[in-house]
Image (tube, rainbow, N blue to C red):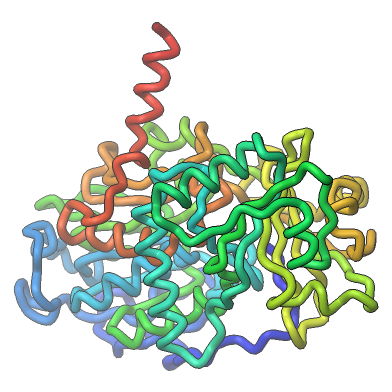
Length: 463
């Protein structure tokens, strides 16, 4: 999660400082409304008077989108409200805005807050996915989406570093990555120990180690991606507000929904819920029993100056490493012109349940040293010194995703419980959420990610 300092943020379009007056009053459209996230005294900015049915909202593809509330005390109405503007919500807002519908994005904190799972400098994108081929449809759509976003901005969104997935020949990481690459027709190589160290001099591996190398794997720039999605959503017509905590989602007349906060409310036809670790509060019966917010540390380690070049893109790929004891470590290269270190972390160690509102304690020295001792034989140029912060993994019981339409609250679609490996899927998941919100179905196969799979697993276990 943590990113190094020193990268200039993308150029975002900021509108005026807000709209005064009650929510139901009309106001200007703002491509991006930036407000102090601590300020709960004022209503949502950027509110507009509801358009007449069938006007001002673009082509309507679903009858629900014409059934917004007409109660003047509720405030403005929207076709879709996106709650939560981390990377999933930002992507969904962008895809919705491009349809011409009247959409609102609401974020409880600031545009680059560090309280969820979307912030920081960098993430890994890989398609030789050891977790299984059921992810391939979303991965392929997401790869195209990252390329599209990267080509549409002057900011760095993605850098092709290649991906190295190292372990023993029978490790889950190596076998799973190879199987998915073969079945998905993904370009890859199978490297032995000598080939690994010859091509990537920063690495030292055991004589029996092997790796899958995916040449098209990427390093994604997380904050750049998030801000670009928000900026492009605003430019396409979305209204965006920060510093407004949604307290409740409530059914309204005619199949509509009311989105309520402290002293404000808006009506809409559909809600896209992309609130990460907070999702259980909105869907307590349907989703809360299936997910647990987890705190996990992430680190930047210093690198010996004499071998620094070996840890830069071009010589150092994004990587995963499965230790013989089962620990799974990930890493990303240093970035030129950045004083920060090498980003490293455990994926399946040092996880602990957390209070989503207050559980972000920094890593202890013992935690940092545990990772360094695990990684030192693999990366001897990494020093024991460095910095750490905490990330949020919203974990499902089977460590996969939860994406779908709510049965508990009709009119709500959601994506959460990305279980620590979801950021790379944001373009695809955002598109899926937009399709679910407007058409009721998705062109991408998401059948593997519905909550009913866990009920089926529970039934099998009971029998």
